Amino acid sequence: MSNFLSIDGLDASYGDLQALWGVSLHVDEGEIVALIGPNGAGKTTLMRTIAGLHRPQGGSMQLGDTTLHTLPAYQIVEKGVLLVPEGRRLFGGLTVLENLELGAYTKRARELRFKTMKHVYETFPILGERQHQRANTMSGGQQQMLAIGRAMMGLPKLLMLDEPSLGLAPLIVQNIFEIIKLMNERDVTIFLVEQNANQALELANRAYILEQGRIVGTGKGRDLLHNNEVRHAYLGYATE
Amino acid sequence: MSIESFAQTLVFGLFVGGIYGIAAMGLALVFGVMKMLNIAHGELVMIGGYVSFWAFSALGLDPFVSLAIVIPVLFALGLALDRMVYRHIVRLLGEEKIKNSLLVSFGLTLVLQNLAQSIFTADERSVQVAYAGEGLNLLGVTMPYTRLASLLIALIVTLALNYFLHHTYPGKAILATAEDFEAAELTGININRVYMMTFALGASLAGIAGTFVTFTYGLSPSIGIIWTLKALIVIVLAGTGSILGAFPAGLLLGVVEAVSGAFVDPTYREVVGLVMFLLVLILRPQGLFARK
Image (tube, each protein chain N blue to C red):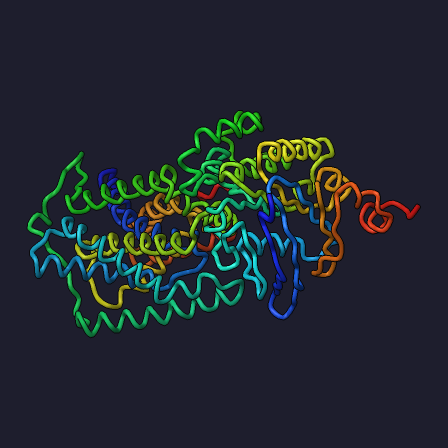
């Protein structure tokens, strides 16, 4: 059960601007781990770096015995690390069905795609009803469901979600969080970035706080939820 | 003008348009997926023409049979050009990508054109098949077999490409990369491979167009730029995101050119194409066949 994803001393930059400074963290198998922090802290950069979209400058990333930081993005997907990116990034001109089929692009996932698709349609019945609709004609909530569904098609061992609640109505956010919890109960490890710190901390076993590219705090989700400093900085409560 | 001669004009417009369509689909594919304008596309049309001409004159192959050589040769050339040249540009971002892709592909145009001139000389060549003068006569409209066959092949290639893109995994990977290359990577697609396949397919389509050019028009090392421009007009008409829309847009350009050549004056034929290009840019910049 130990160190499923482990990140050690990760540095990343955009041009001359360093975005991550020696970030170290770990996510254990079966956990839900949240990453919270203010805008511009580097949360999205960290997610993109783990997914292989952004090359780190230094440090290491391991998934079990596999070294991730030298692999291109598509091979990281093959290892079972899937990212639901910020802003969903669907293939807007393609249908719901085509988006889901593309989600199962890797050899490992493709063989099981019909079974997985049935499972996705059970989880999100609306996607089944709208199979032949183009992705960019759906509502924000439905698009987020499709983005998660597309990642599910890739048979994730570690599912990373970057701001899944962004721009969605509270009721739909509730729904999305329930699905995340459900997936976790089905043995998918979850690593989650959220602005909505309150809800994220409630859901997560553990959480990290990222500020200006550095990890400045960590703890159990519930502990952080009741920590005065965190409440003040991220949850919008006055200090008690 | 009689109805027969008008119908004849339309039919010949469609024949020419089929070649435009095939050439433009290749350019549209590369533009849509790799997001760069390959000015050397017309040069690939020219090289395809020379491969077909060589197969005809040295091996005695019928130009339609020569497609079996032209397509794989241009595919391989596409793979090589991607590896040596375009791979280094496609990952650049923003302005740097636009500038470099234009400069490099323009440079490649000059290189390929001069190479063709030193290998094949600047003499104009063309292929005359034994059945060149034969054809169908339908209600007073003449349809030469060569022209009819090239339109038919163009149509089949378009349908095959449509099937490939929408119903096979490698094809869907190309569409996905065109939509959002990072999202494509996040589903496990190796986009370097997609780019390579895309460029090679685009080159193959150029080669098919080039084969048709050898027996429809003449062939010389300098024809490349004309085909790049025609293809460019067509993809703007179709809408720059629309790969398969380039085929009907090509037919449309062919017909409009032929009709204006017959009604206005043959010398204004090219001008009418460009006027249509401008009108579409002004009135419907998303193109005629783009969905959004």
